[in-house]
Length: 104
Length: 428
Image 1: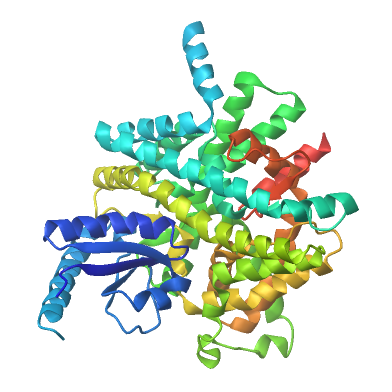
Image 2: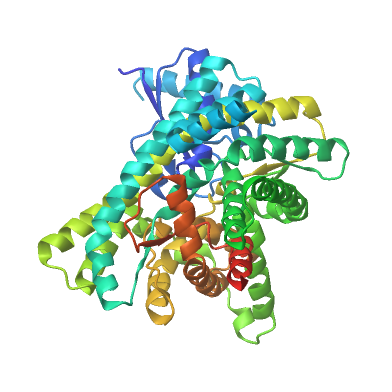
């Protein structure tokens, strides 16, 4: 079972804010020693990107249900409440990883 | 002093490829990013810039048969859509970057300290809109005959003034932005949207409210579903538009295929290049943001100014954007004065505008499309009106060496500030 997680960070254009947030996501993964491939996409590409992802992160509030876990990481852009979101993200990553390794 | 200005001039002569990494390094050091990290950031921005140079050069080469066709007939679509990404790279490559960005941030900080405004614009990326307007003003001043230090000082002052203005507007927009998108403690400081798209949307929405019957029509996203959003894939649109333009200008089949695939490639690759640019910018942007928030205190009563992108999660905006594509193309044909054929514009410029518009129409798709039509007429007008200035701005930056006679425009120029500047320029 692969321990590498695929994380997609989405924003309006898939360029500006998602790239900014992706750096912080990579830091969180490093800090808790999880190997992850972090990619970025636009909101419009999100549905197709989500098929191959383990976790979806959005820089905004996405209002449509997806088949994969979704977490909003707006604070990685605004800089307010970063630690709280980092913690939530870390816990979510651990949870996904343990579910994966038990073969669910 | 003489030798110093000679050194500066010789660096300026190398152009953006040399200048950009140095400017980003400089801004990074101001906000206490460590030297190697700041250097890497600067290099990444430079690399993104070079990547963009390649793609825009390729885009212009791909569209050359079409440009030649229209040049020979002397009419039709002679303004090439190079995409907002190109303009942003050109803006960052101006000689104003190293001065306007730090100065704007410092002034912003002081204004909050003295409780004159509440908006902290941490969205450093979107300083490109201010840099672009400053560069456009500088071009106009040159026409008028003002050059040298006076030209620089006026343009820099204008850029900094705009950075203050956007924070002031950010304060005004904050309650509506927070209510509709649910992003507490933030506001939108993307000058393009809140100083142009937003006022257009508010006025048209107000007019619709006065029209009987029409004012009662409300189509929400829930009734339409998400079937159309994914139709608007930029790569597919690029391929279709390329083939369409090829057929329209009577190209032979192999050329049509080449243009179709080429345009799809350019539209798909441009954002990837800007992503490199942005990867370089991220550490600097974060350092500046965290530095200022730390100095102000996390509990300070401020609005964090963010990119309009944070509002684009809204599915209505994406779906309305898809509906707008055929409408935009029809308008490009119908309006007799129009020489701009939108292509890269459908990448994300349109979605951003529609996010702003749906915010005003409160998610009513019918209204959003009506407002979108008025917005598009203005946009096409602005692209035509400012095309020669925009072309000069892009060539000066060295993003792409344009063949003689080629005019370019792109998302970003469709704003009141640059249009007013262009109008003033035409008076002389």
